[in-house]
Length: 393
Ligand code: SAH
Ligand code: SF4
Image (tube, rainbow, N blue to C red; front, side, top):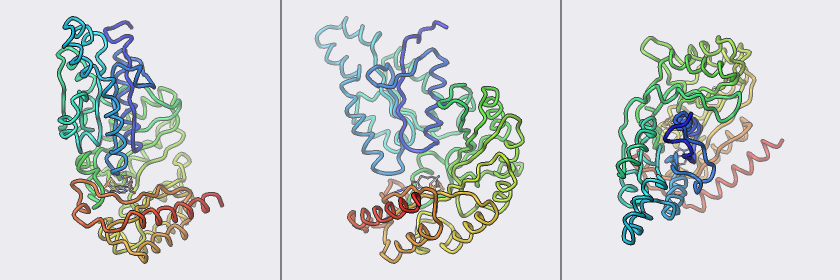
């Protein structure tokens, strides 16, 4: 179908978690339905969007430097130099070759105001809750030659999930909830993605059915802590999994991420019984030290975590993965050895191991970041090495 956008290209670069991967896919779907094409290279695109992660400082630094490097691509900076020479040329640039550069997602919520002021070539900044508005904002920027910043935090509109574009044939991720109200002390997610908000079971099921009608057989259910799912009618995550499992055409289901503090034996029993649910559990433990777990507000002890893993291994018998943070404030060698002990005992299939970085607005930011960088690096390297041996065994 020919429309005013045909020939226009959008490039969406994604940083961070699977939730961002799905958000970018849904957003690209909206653009494709408006006649845009997808561009891999920002140089080829009319609209460049960075869908960002604010979970670790490192990810933010990278995006800041990429954004800086886009200054030369920006029509806004080219316009101002052109307008000095030739107004007609400036108008033509506006109409034909306006490259719109957007910072969207978690970093927008975190540092959007500051970047809006410091980087005038970034002409669109949108928080995770308002991604569905982006195509309309782009039209407005093009027509009115303005900059837009929208950092509102509210319930996402269902329409956001309606497009049929999927990155991987036969596979789809389905968001069951947005935000998080767990407030782990190191984590910026509750402040950048907002409080936990549930999508309705009927909307989730409708999206899964749309996927099935597209020939998709494998589904991943996504939430920051999937176990927090419980709607006003009492439908919890295990109920939701059962509802998805019962749908004809769905052949394989998995989910990300369960939290150890409210992972139940009911979940394990369903996983054991089901022919569709993948026997893999991603169960972040973050630290093996009870003192550090308390400071992290994680809500379980080392002993309780290990008992949960035992239950999983006995009831389900599947594989397991995890996330770990080393160098959290006050972490001693003894605390670290408890973390290492869990890694040795459980024998994870894979582990994402991170060096702690303080994040703005979190509880832990108030604690002194007192583990020296070289100690963080040493502990990080030691766990990576150990996990490599376990994964290769
Ligand atoms: N909702 C998921 C993922 C959260 S973010 C969960 O609860 O498991 C992904 C991972 O990033 C976390 O599990 C944690 O290991 C890591 N992380 C979060 N904040 C961090 C910080 N400030 N410094 C280092 N790693 C962090
Ligand atoms: Fe962050 Fe904890 Fe929520 Fe995960 S459960 S998103 S680590 S606050």
